[in-house]
Length: 377
Ligand SMILES: O=C(O)CCC(=O)C(=O)O
Ligand SMILES: [Fe+2]
Image 1 (cartoon, protein in one colour):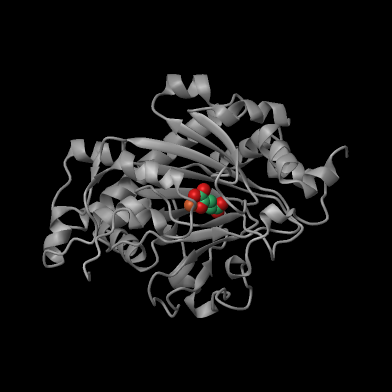
Image 2: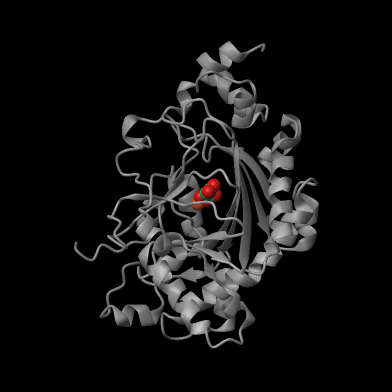
């Protein structure tokens, strides 16, 4: 326990322990610290207040909010029920921008293997993770923009960018690369089908080249949230929205993710936080910022956050379907026509959005401000 006191009282020592030596917040939790260092304490207005905006889902709303949508008809492509499924997805994307899916085409055994693989990665020795802290293709970090953030998230993560099998095999960590690659590929058909269904309902057409540009960059992002002695003071993942078209998230049974209602919907008030319950075998789908922009605001990219748990560690993995860097993004022409010529977002190159996103400390929707047009000015 050489330096526990120093780690606790001195930010430089804490930074060195967490980031410099690769221990991450897991290293802190492994030392069974009785309380979190000050660097993890959120200001009162950012804490998760159990009794205020966060309400358990009333039983009569459970189905509307959380009942997983079966994608069987959509993926098999033969059933007359396809349209019914598309309608459900579109309604969910318009309402909360969050829904859960089953019959998604990814075998349950693979989902289990993925969860084991995530544990295996984070349970390695600090030195093995540390080498990835400067990685460009696979990057290990703790919190998100730790250099800039006044308060850190209680989470370690590994982000793996995919451009080719060869590059992934060379750069992704040995303990998890094969399973993660298999999972990314197994979930790709589902993600592409969901994007196609959502774009299809916006009217007009997106040709093959444009579709490839919009969906051509996959990023796999694994999260590890260790048990936390002060869940009431901390955040596992701060409030943010994803920079993707859509995100497919696999979570374990612990729970802790919640999404914020962007409007009054299904008996939930705008601004309320809705817990996303773990559903065995299901994947959580979030609409991302790019989809909100393409749809000119019709689909919602929900702000979401993760609380910490006193007793359990929690893992999750997000597969982001992102545009390629050079892609031109803006509301699709037909969505502007539908809105009587009013565009809510300007056009931009995705890379510029990304640079803004990864250099700005996340506080809710700020990355979206980058593209927003103030039509009331
Ligand atoms: O861990 C979760 O449930 C959500 C993680 C998340 O929002 C993200 O990785 O973007
Ligand atoms: Fe997210």
